[in-house]
Length: 288
Image (cartoon, rainbow, N blue to C red; front, side, top):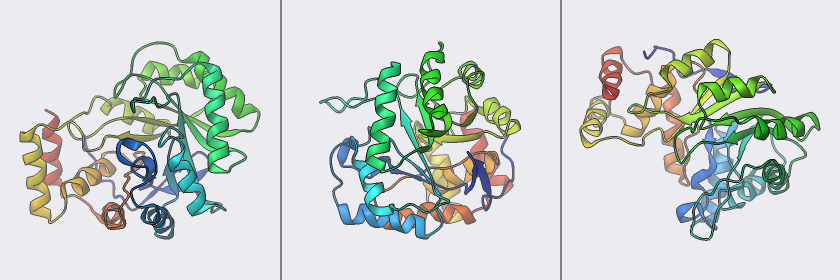
């Protein structure tokens, strides 16, 4: 059930408190998350403006581009603010057709960590998420070998904190027997609420939950319902969907992404939105 938690708060991510609205770098490269951005200057300005406006959590991956997002982050923001947390992901690559084939053997993960370090210009990565599962849903099975490889890099000082992405509860529990987990990044939104119980369990353990595809997978009827709430409140549908996520639980962190300064400001404005209880009830009913 959605709470009335206000969005104007911070949450612990690794060893730092960050505002709950961060920035996702996936939309910075070109079409299909491949190649250089359509407007390099705008992409750099988006990153710099995000940090100027208080963003302290940036989510990225070296397979965005590939390498394009990370190199833009480095150019725009290095030397990095001391309180900035950069979260990256490993476990996939890009192929010549623009696909996302898995690359999860321990040697693959080690190589990807070093590529992230190089392209971001860092000596150690703040948080590394092990990305597993299918295209947008977990696939059951052990992740011990993969997570142990990352835990070894953590012990060597190349990674400060570890997370997991596209995983189920059993995989999270398995990972936590190997090393602490500071965040879980899974598909979750108004229409796809399979992680409802998991979010609450993670909140009890003070582990951040970072939803991806926050506006994906709606039917036309459900979109009409969301649009109706947005119209009544004078907001965009995306703002409403994001505000609902923030009110869902205090451990939910957002990583809305854009390559547009105008959209960036619209995304960050969600921090000041508190949805009325009657509209939250309408939104909660979408999943059922």
